[in-house]
Image (cartoon, rainbow, N blue to C red):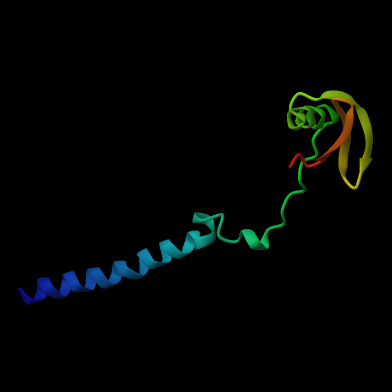
Length: 97
């Protein structure tokens, strides 16, 4: 009986280091890729097209008549609208936000 217990204990101790090595082989970063996001560079924001910006501006104008495109200013598309004789501009960032 004593010999069996000794063999079982020896087998447990012999397999414990092998399982610890198997866990360390993959590494924590492999299992959780979002863990080091602060260290990874962010991709450049996507620029929207002129027609996408125009559609956004028209939706913000809420039914006002589209007059035309004014200019690109400080990374924004600027569109002009008319509502009852009153002109106003709507700027849409080139990133679409």
